Image (tube, rainbow, N blue to C red; front, side, top):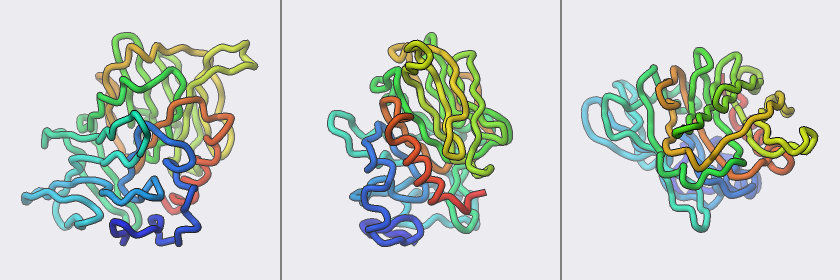
Length: 267
């Protein structure tokens, strides 16, 4: 078990195996959540807060959930450290809307069932038209595991066997890591397309395709895990990291590959 302050990754690898290789160390994100591991080398805080069905709340990894009864995820803590960008925890105060927590012997999972979601609306004021999203999760069908929306634009990451990344009415298919749900996507200018903005996906170490699109980031007002406006998610989320900028030409592939290595046994 990982305890707060110990400089190892989820599986206890020594610090020289994780120093500078974690998603929030390779380049600073605007949000960084994980149920299972630290995402920044010097992070010593909690990963998530949970509620026991019988009563009482606590934080992991300081305390360990009792999964002999139903347990709910109430909050995931933002692990980033970025100048000028405050911590934005993702949370759900309404008990009826909180996802349940499960553990498969290796990983904790937040489980959503077409109605549960966790909000992080304040992050939208920092989102630009160029962004990179990395999500670890799986679903029964392409539905929004993570969504950003406003008056005119809707963006979502939708894991499933036929996973996709959507911007408004444009849908781009992506290939996850051998069915294990490590997904990356990005939006940015694409010079081969005459400088048009495109949305692209990374899967199995390569781009899954480009589609010309546009997004007015200033219109985004809401963000959630488990929801995109009126659409909801059925499935599980283990980790979410979002960076500003199009990382397809710099660090995106490296972060994707490092995350695959951590979640090799996730299925």
